[in-house]
Image (cartoon, rainbow, N blue to C red):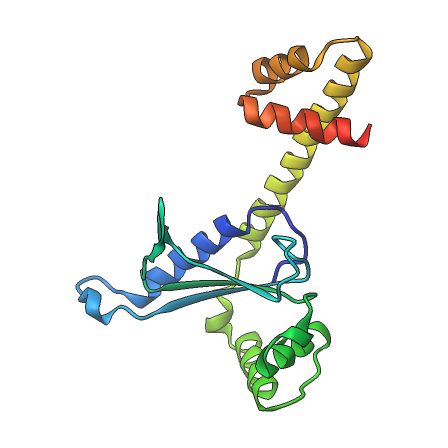
Length: 194
């Protein structure tokens, strides 16, 4: 469950897929025995701002979008605040369940049982993010916010010194270890709110 958009959900999906991989194929097993893995992220925000209820991420061959790669992994992002009226009944039932906990049919009843089972099973609970992982993630987010705030204050200060856009971007590249694209994005973010 993601309740804030830190713009890194794809990286977290990769981490969870990696953890699942350790569980689905053991040393010495044939690749034909590998099971399909699914990572389902429930978000109370629209990650891609396309007003979709869910997004399925699929690997494809670069330059050939018609060639999809079946690597046995499925990654789905569910936007719990999306417009469920355009979705199938099962999706509507799932969105209702995860938004307010209401069981409205067989599917949400099964979901409720599964959620309760995982919450009550110590062994399955080990598969959740550990406190250390959570703390490390929150610490990384805090450092990122501090860095962004420091960049913003620096940009505002340089603007008051009458430096032009190119000078400010060069300063950010030289002093904040940003590439040109990152420096330009930081500059535009600050100037959009100035």
